[in-house]
Image 1 (spheres, rainbow, N blue to C red):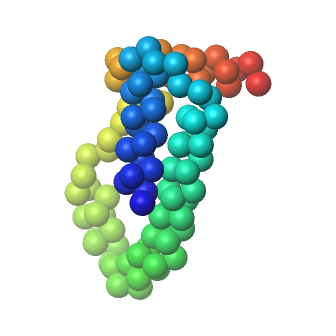
Image 2 (image 1 turned 90 degrees about the vertical axis):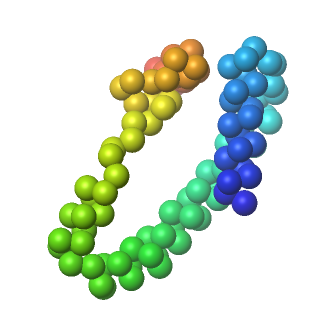
Length: 99
């Protein structure tokens, strides 16, 4: 379900970036739905996966996990925002500053 919610939100954002007029309520609903699934996913990881990992992994194991994948930059809010998200990022920053 989280994947479908994420894809739906991504489609909404891409449509907006392509110039489509999308009702704000629809975007808010897609974002809220994704966030509910995402929060539940993170809570489950913390409760189950990380608890089990903490019981079994050594310090060397944690270091290996940390070094296994490069740090990925957030495409929307990272310092090197992807070009297609630049305008959306600017609009979000303006709204955040105004509120």
